[in-house]
Amino acid sequence: MGADKPLDYKNLEINMKSIIKIIFTACLVINFAIDIAYAQTDTAKVFRITLTDNTEIVAKIINETADSIFFATPLGIKLGIDKKNISDQELLSGYFENDKYVRIDPNRTRLFFSPTGRMLKSGEGYISDYWLFFPFISTGITDFLTISGGMTLFPGTDNQVFYFAPRIGIIQSDKYSISGGILYAAAKENNFGIAYGVATMGSKTHAFTLGIGYGFSDGDLDKKPVIVIGGEAQVSNSIKLISENWIPPGSSEMIISFGLRFFGENLAADFGLITSSKASGGFPFLPWLGFCYNF
Picture: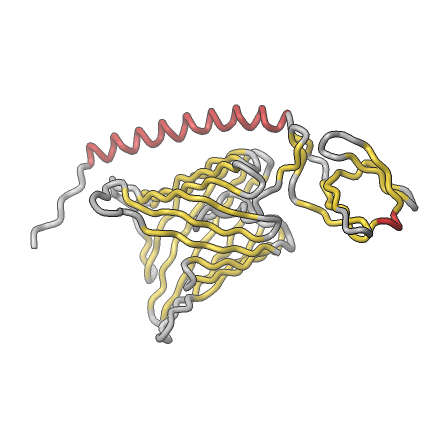
């Protein structure tokens, strides 16, 4: 067998400069879009009000008395209703924008696998599963501390991998979110993982994510980082476009993924395709499947 082909550091440097330019341009465009979007967004809390005849109304509450509730619909129509005619009142995660209700992706703290800069709120949590064999559970201890963990479910073997992933929020705002954490995994006598930081800039429906991390194995830390570049664009109240892309340490090759997230108020399901920037011939994609229930 022949020797491995050496890295072309000149081309790698050019590629990295191009990536940095793209990131900088994307940040400027997204920031401009955010300013426009938030100028049109009503951030008041939105409720689903269920009447005793099972009629459901999505509205923001503008006033409440001992006997009645007064609310406004997305079109701005103001109504009042007697409390005895209300059977349930549920706080929703979405908001009103341009006279419409916009649902928030319940799995907003992750792309396909990599975390975004956003954190779970205190008391929030989710149960997720990737490729069926990699279940995960996460919970927000506070608004700035999330604890996650799980273990593989490979059939026919007792050599499972256990993983633990604490994460701390540094900045959490409507436009910008920065967090950092560690994904630690152990299997019998081996341990490995990654220490990382990740930043997300964007609105609740459209955002750009950049992450950097250093892998480690059995106590040895990599000298070069892995870089993650991702994006998300919500196109309806149930579908989001997602892309998550990895640049391995010291490589000019990029692992590329893109696909769809289908979501409701609590459940999200991801389907994506994974390939390499140097893939060629045949059908160069691997499927990605993920499910997440948020509580």
